Length: 259
Image (tube, rainbow, N blue to C red; front, side, top):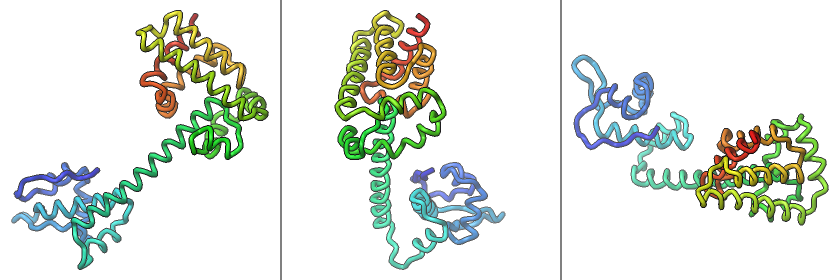
C-alpha cells in the first residue's frame, strides 16, 4: 500500500501511522529498530511518536518497496549524503512508468494468446506477429496445453489447425468477427440474450467452432460460454470488440443450449 501524506503537523502514534500506511505496528517497530524510519519523539510512557518528516520518509520507503527494493538497499539509498527527495521521486516515477509500459505490453500479449486460443492459432512465428499485430501468442500456448492438452477436443483442434494456411486463418478470423458483430448489433438494438436472434447468433458461433476446430455439442458450447465470463482474461479479450459482449454471448449461448 502507498502511504498518502497527511497535512497535520501533530505528532502521530504508531497505531495511527499503522492505520494510514497499511503496515502493521510490528513492521513499524522493525523499521525503527533497523534505523529505517525512526520516530522523532517518544511519549513519557515510551510510546513512539511520528512527525510529518517521519511520515515523508516512510512514504519514500513504501515507494521503494513498490519498486522491489530490499530494506537494506532502501536504508543505504536514504542514507546517502547526496540523496534528495525530489530527484528520488522523479526517478521512482520514471521506473514505475517503465514497469507500467512493460505490464501493458504483457497484457496485450496475453490478450493475443487468448485470441489465439479462441481461433486455434497454428502459424509460423512471422505470420503470428503479422496476424496479431506484433505479438507472439505461441509464447502462451503452454498454459492452454496444460489445461486442455489431454482432452479429445484439444487433440482434434490440433489435428485440424496443423494444416491451416495463413489464408485459412484470415478467413476464419473474418467469420469470427462477423459473428461478434452480429452479437454487437443485437446488443445495440436492445435485444434480450434469450431472444431468437441472439440464440441464432449463438448457434452460428457453435457451428463456427465445430467447422474450424473441434466438434462442439450444445453442452460443451454452454460450458465454453460460462468460461467467457468466469475467466477474466477471456472476458477482457472478448470485450475488446465491445463492452459487455462476453456476458451477452454467454447468456445467449446458455439460452441456445436450453432451446
